[in-house]
Length: 275
Image: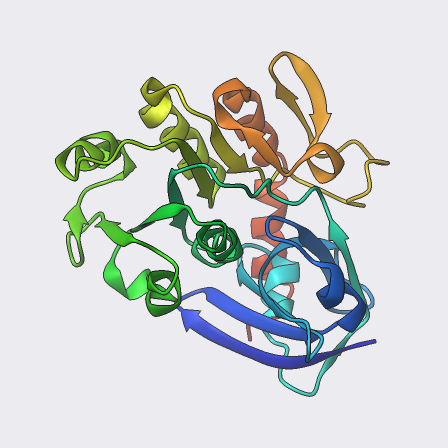
């Protein structure tokens, strides 16, 4: 059993969860994920690790409530225990001296891209961080990100903070700030990953996206997380989760992500967990 150290809602419907898992905390690297089961009869949920403390043996994840299992996970409290925390899983993000790198995060991806930003900064890169959200009340960890960023640019759809608009404005914003990237990293929902890739492909540099397909075992055995990358089938759990977005089959991935949308909605409405 793994002890819950902290759980809090950091913005509406987005939660921070910290658990005690010293063996994983000792080995975890930027870009890797864990699989967590909040209760004995709950689903196995893959979660990117947003931070860790090797000395204290803790892992911190940011997650959104989207179905029954994440709703139950949001009900955990400090001093509770969870039955399953497996990891580290996936390949670490390749961190090296590149030059000017752009790191883009939205929603839970603001948290999961934090270790990547920190590691790139420590390698001597010039890190430009871009945060995207519907409104400023959905932003978080800005101070933490500023600590390792040359510049932080914010885009909100309602204009409540930073630039007004959507990720489709990104290319123009970079031009206005005379930013020319040598590499791009993106974390967040599949829509953000695909649209950012589409918007920034003209730079002709790697666009490293952290994919989040449906996943079960996380070790390459079930094949549920398969994605098509550069015409070949890959498993996001063992071949990724990082891939160059320019060669990902986004249409296929977006369709596969929606497979159980109706079932998730039914479970939330009928489980009684939110009462």
